[in-house]
Image (cartoon, rainbow over the protein chains, first blue to last red):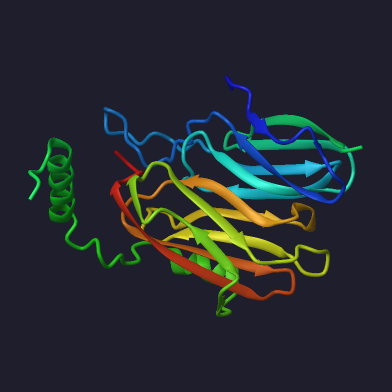
Length: 108
Length: 150
């Protein structure tokens, strides 16, 4: 997998604040419906699952189908009760998992 | 009356082509297994109206990437939150689009994704609350260039 996922979230948040997280990962998201020049179906290859955890607790996840655009962009929210680390993971059809981590601190 | 300039002429021409190519576009019909997906998600229960605001463009010029935003009214506390939201497109080769799972830690039941739409069709969102109640909302999106196959 070539590019690093892009993740945008604030560096710090007040306790209890709901922050917005934007993620984008480069992926072809081949739907399995397209045909190549020889008329053969190009096999499906998509990211079928995205998950976000905060300090080990699930925050948001989604199961994705071929109807998700290439380079899937996912935006969601998270409530920050404590400082910690977000873990993001994108699971490919072929079993590879792209992961990323982002830290967030509490506002003093 | 002002003469039609080049840009307007193109817009008119484009609209005409779309209309002639898709005479059935106005009544988007279910062409896939959407009912099965919905049945599996709801367990046969009838979802109520409301709570969901589904934001989609009325006309999508490019079906390859259609922005979709969803926001569900909920306090998102441990006792009452939105558990899952299923998004269905009833005119795609496969009805499923995405299933979003929220937790109380999400803070807000809100998400945005970009989806593919093959043709003009209804996009349906069904939300399952933590108490088991169901809510649904649907929007029709007119698609000028489809986003599947090719």
